[in-house]
Structure formats: C-alpha cells, structure tokens
Length: 52
Image (cartoon, rainbow, N blue to C red; front, side, top):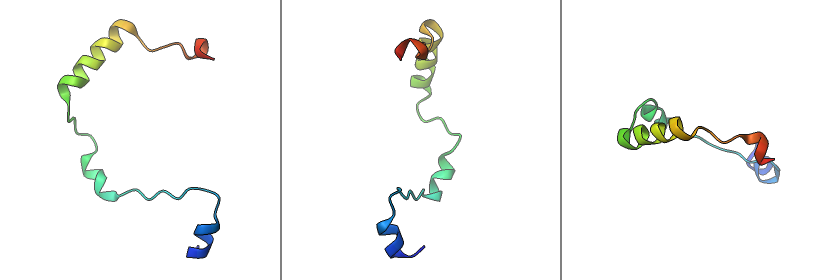
C-alpha cells in the first residue's frame, strides 16, 4: 500500500510498538489489583442485559 493509498483510506491504521511485549504478564500495581478483585468478588459484574 502506498502512502497515497493510506491517506485516502477510510479505515484507521494502528501501529503497535513491539517493545511493549516485554511488559506482558507483569503486575505493576498488585495492591490495587488485589483490592479490585475483592470488590468484584463482593459486588460482581453488572448485568449487561439490564443496561440495554
């Protein structure tokens, strides 16, 4: 695809930086993650059918 074609395209082009792969699988905020899991265990996820 030429540069001209990219400018005329009606779709978005997203380029993902491959250096982000080194961050995959790491937990950066374990305290917040633990707290959020506790909140979800108590309240649960919202019923999406009721939101429609």
